Amino acid sequence: MERVAETLTILQPEDKEAIDLPRTSEDELATGKKRLYIESYGCQMNFADSEIVAAVMRNAGFATTSSAEEADLIFLNTCAIRENAEQKVRNRLQHLNALKRRKPDLLVGMLGCMAERLKTKLLEEEKVVDIVAGPDAYRDIPKLVEEAESGQKAVNVFLSREETYADIAPIRLNSNGVTAFVSIMRGCDNMCSFCVVPFTRGRERSRDPHSIVREAEALLADGFKEVTLLGQNVDSYKWASEDSTESVNFAQLLERVALISPDLRVRFSTSHPKDITDEVLYTMARYDNICNYIHLPAQSGNSRVLKLMNRTYDRPWYIEKINSIRRILGEDCGISTDMISGFCTETEEEHQETLSLMEYVRYDYAYMFAYSERPGTLAAKKYTDDIPEDVKKRRLNEIIALQQQHSAERNRRHVGKVQRVLIEGTSKRSDDFLCGRNDQNKMVVFPKGDLQKGQYVNVLVTDCTAATLLGEVVG
Image (cartoon, rainbow, N blue to C red; front, side):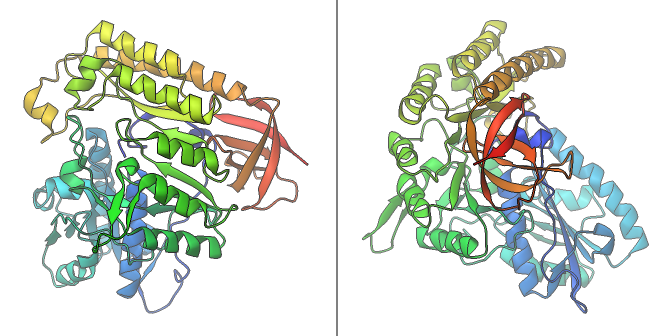
């Protein structure tokens, strides 16, 4: 999970046609219970973690609410991958400080990567914060709340080598009732020089595949039609039983989930170019319900810069992975990426290589941002952030402009074709239209008629923008 939706420039369907995601549980209106409000920032993993926290707190007697003003306890589940992401949280804390003055008994907690990075320093800098809990401390939150209720500041930022929360059934706060996240692993062993995640989420560990399958089966039984398998690097998923009689890699796990039902669509994120295998690609090709879409972050198109980033692959290696995807899954397979402009010492010629890689791949959409140094990372220790901000921004704008062209071009490939779409809800622009995603993760918008959320429909694409397909239901 190398990206932060709140702080990046993103060309993807969600920007134009987003689904409103309720932050409420079924017992929101329960009387006699304290109310919990959770606000999530950053990658999909943080949103999935918030659902685990909600489950832990429900067992401790809390009901969730969609209103911060109604809450007795507010958690911000934070991201630390970019300075802007942390600043956004700090700005939010200022608003919560005003709320806390009106409600002196209100408790405010910081969860996630920013909490892990700053630890007790956060309590010193942000007086409004009562609780600090890292990503592996969520089971301990009820005890931390008790400490805070007694007037003490409460902290647990211990990182575990075993915790996967496999036995906790998440409360689907961030779900539209059709799609859901399923975390399959935690942590990251890649030490990309620009990334703080290994320091905030700890070492990589994989979840028992049987618990993953059970969770996906339960989601299907509850009416969900799509699951997204989540990990910092899903392709490095590996699990072995204690007696060594069973071992499962990611391709095998993907197959197990796909076999639950042909009506359950399966997605996954994020893939690391060095780890995605042809076995994964051939597994995708065998099952129609595994979506024909891969997020494959490149970060740069230049081999020297990739080496400085410690990405452990070079430009030719990445291109060969793209070639394998096109060969095995076809030209219509959706591919997205992450791109960083202005990494340390990046030359103009190396920036041009990023643009030329984009020209070669022609991504469907991308997460794009200018490099900003993160304290504690390898890059911060070894390299100088020496690219002027105006140069970073100019290079970023060139990347964005090129991706805008490619996104429109890739979407035009679908015009005149029929797409199988899973309806996720009402279009954000008009209640008269529905929207959902096709196999390649593109948002499709079409007239509502008498259709309902959760149905699969065939949509003839009649027009498109750079971010959205437009069409009408057929057949």
